[in-house]
Amino acid sequence: MLQILKYLKPNEHQSSDFDAHVDPPRFLFLLINKRCNLKCTHCSFWQDNDDDRPNYLDREGKRRILREFHSMNPKGAVVICGGESMLDLEDYFDVSKESRQLGLTCLSVVNGTRIRGGAIADRMILEGPHEISVSLNSHHAWLHDKTRGVPGAFDKAVAAVRHLLAARARSGKSKTRIYVMGLIFDENYRDIEDFYDFVLNDLGADKLKLNFLQPSFGDTSVDHFFAEHHKVDPDELLAIIRRCNERFDLRLNPAWMANVHMYFQSLRTGRDLEKGWAAPAQTSKHICNTYERNIMVDHYGVARLCFSTDFRGARLRAEGDLRKFWLQSEDIRRKMRKCNKFCGISHSVRRISSTLTPAAYSLPLQSSHAQAGRGETHV
Ligand SMILES: C[S@@+](CC[C@H](N)C(=O)[O-])C[C@H]1O[C@@H](n2cnc3c(N)ncnc32)[C@H](O)[C@@H]1O
Ligand code: SF4
Image (cartoon, rainbow, N blue to C red):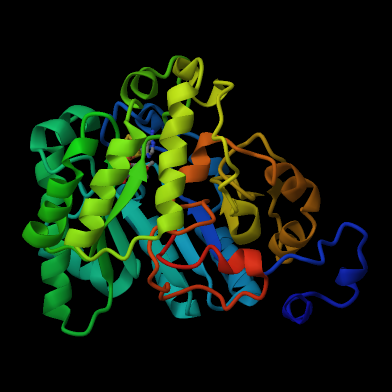
């Protein structure tokens, strides 16, 4: 409770809507654009555009939200989200630089196409996020390019990782973490061991984070990719992950492995998966804790407790609105505690982290349920 009172305005805690059990938020996800330059078959963001940009929250609006987030949790982390967020470079660096100035940790996942040489890689190391993940669907160029929808995408993603690693080495002192974010589905799960070998030993990235196929991101009436590529044998996958854990000394969390098994088991028995997010299927266990740690702010400045628009959001018009939303959302949390949607397996929202290694940045939270979610970056 003391933790909460520190960031309350006088008398705010007397509100009847006030949630007395909530810790400060740990992650702020800030969406800066919608468009994308690849054509992934598991994502439809690239079919969207930013024509509505005049109605987006402007740079000063985003800075105001960053400042307020910092006042709620000076040790929090900011995640820059897109589309391909690096298509809007000045907006991208505005968020990373403001986060750095405030002392917040900044993270982002990018497709790598915009990190084409030493100069931009140097800027990323100097002004960009503290943790940069480049997405890769496979160590096989043909599979990455096929599922990313654009020939040459693999070469660009791999070159981006190499440019970033070289820039970090040049800087001499940078502690920027350079990861690969791998999407796992039916065509690549049997090759995970070689994927790790490529990422850790050939590329020399700091980590390969495994991200498991969910219904396609964006609006799709028929989710072909999810329906056709979710069939992963849970037992076989777990045996492969265990082997990688030993060979590469990954320190993976057994509770996370159990959740991954449960996830693919749930998909196996799920009905109507071609309906994507609208399918009635769910995970058999509740594995998400987004409502205890995250605030997502969309392009228009609407805050939510997860990416789903099925739950109420609130427009952030002025200083104080972020704090108020976080503290007065018990109605949303009550619903989310019963939510078993497939997104529960994602880095951004799951309670259990994949590794046993303590995170470089997370709050010393007081509640025991929040402690359970510590570990890796976890976004
Ligand atoms: C939506 S993208 C946005 C950032 C950037 N454009 C990129 O591709 O890295 C963020 C992450 O979501 C992953 N992703 C896309 N579609 C997905 C799906 N259907 N299920 C799970 N992850 C997905 C991507 O592979 C990427 O690592
Ligand atoms: S996953 Fe990323 S790169 Fe692929 S279409 Fe979606 S936003 Fe673009």
